[in-house]
Amino acid sequence: MTTCATQRPSPANARTSPARWHTRIAPWTQRCSSWPALSACRPLGFPPGTSSVPATGTAFGWGRDGYGGVAPCRRSEVALRFTDPQRCVRAQRDLGIAPRPQWQLCAQPTPGATRNTCTGDSGGPVLATPAATTITGIISWGPSCRVDDIGVYVSVAPLVPWIDHVAHTQPSG
Image 1 (cartoon, rainbow, N blue to C red):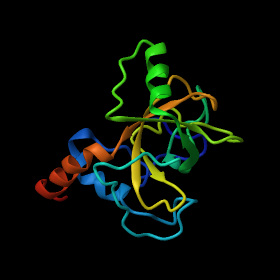
Image 2: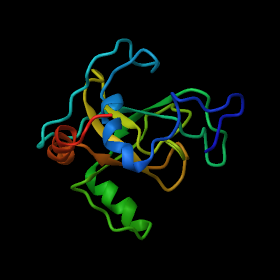
Image 3: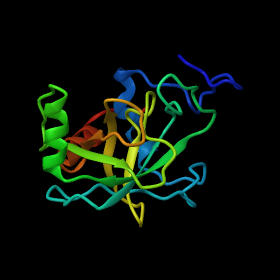
Image 4: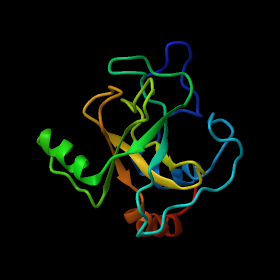
């Protein structure tokens, strides 16, 4: 596990094994004051299955501050603007990757941003803004950490039935 430059990992930021992933859905569904943009803890919602893509969102994670950069000592956030689905498809095809638009969203940092999602952010939530009460996406991948690159995010809307099933059929703990 990679640690930040000034502190050792703590239970609060330790990675979770895939076998225990289903027990870790709940933490991502809470708005907590430990995230700078979020002021109070309360449950977050999932988008309806036919949800349209919002214009903007905010991604949260523990990713590096740039390609080859250092891991942060606290969660960071990136304000995003979602791109046209056709631009998303073209960007992936240009990289030789088969796009899956029914499962993916693409976004770039908003103008004036100083960072993009990066290595270590994968798996973090993307909340629809301005209300930040709906988990719209999950950070997945990007060709680089550059501010002008398009990142690919998993669309949560088509996964809501599966999330509901897993959350209600898996033992807790």
